[in-house]
Length: 67
Image 1: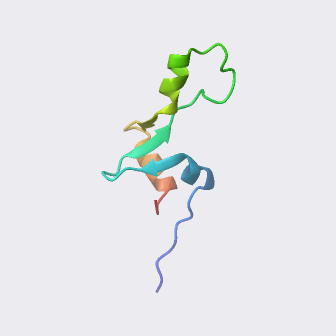
Image 2: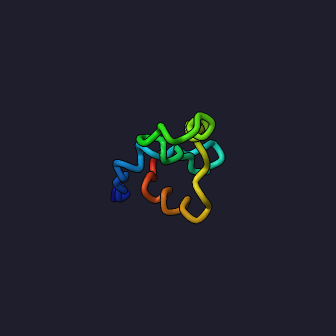
């Protein structure tokens, strides 16, 4: 018998990655529009990726089972 395959959530596979230690890496929000009122320093810090919170990580891992 074959193992049941789990479908990957399409938008999640584009937004999240797993690190080598299994943590969930994500990009920061608030970087797409209304950028004129935000300082250069703030926009520069929004470029960096960060680790998803411990509360959200298990849910995200279910959505991206094969990453």
